[in-house]
Image 1 (spheres, one colour):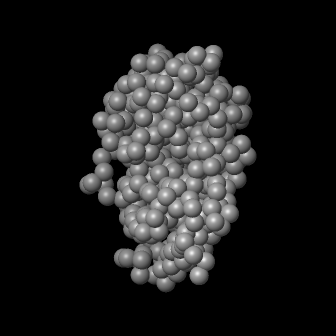
Image 2 (cartoon, rainbow, N blue to C red; image 1 turned 90 degrees about the vertical axis):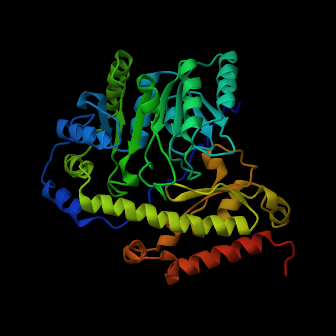
Length: 402
């Protein structure tokens, strides 16, 4: 068991700023003269629209089971406050999972993920982590997992997910299922994603930060779906109290635009499918590049990220003074690299997250060209970025200086 958390003062890691769809701009502009915020937890039309969003994903939901907030971290803070206990996270995990627990003074326990995928802890590691936490006087109450993981870009298999969820429920843990990136599957016909709420509906809160797919990166908006049980009612009420205490309401104009986006008009669905396709192409290129350089890396299946382990290259990296993930991150900063220490891994581990965002282009026009291209790998700015990364890795990992 590792009772720790990622970098205590992580630098911001905002979602990539893709060009905003004109339809969303129009709805935001139409509501721009609203001076009042939405009610804390979300206005009734927004929560009703969220029910339709989840119904299309196989999760029947009532509006009184939904909360909305300005961003995933705010909702996670409210959920941790409501659960009132320690938090178990996979290692590695998204870097926004731990800071809300730390702000509340909640202990954070990290359980390693299995070799097959990220997003969920190994079930035996989960049980051992909980057992040791209790031996030390802590009371874990929450497991956060992800069906489409950041940082690894992988999706746990349904049987693997079920085993972990059953273990968590047996230990009396709430499960918070981060489903932010479930719509960004690179090949929807090849990758099966199930929500834990379909498996164990009474024990799972579904969390999704809408900035990954439905709304622009600058519009923080997130949803939580609670179980239709007495325990779920109590948890939702406590989370709503926490959101109220910190004034975490959506601005009125943003709430109106998010309500429209939750209806998933055709243009927005097409944009999500395009982004998923482009991320798949660029992610596959990055995976090929880092594995050719000698790194170990799970193939990404969702979202924009992959997680490379350069431990096999420790000797040549050490010869260049790179012996931990902070230094690796600094060397690969031009490609939006984030060292593994930010995701709960030990700083001495030579792991790094890389993202397709670094290949999209530096401005809105280049990013739009990348999204519009039948094959993004044929674009000059993409090939130049990949070539530069390949040369940088070769320079860092070659066995001679010459």
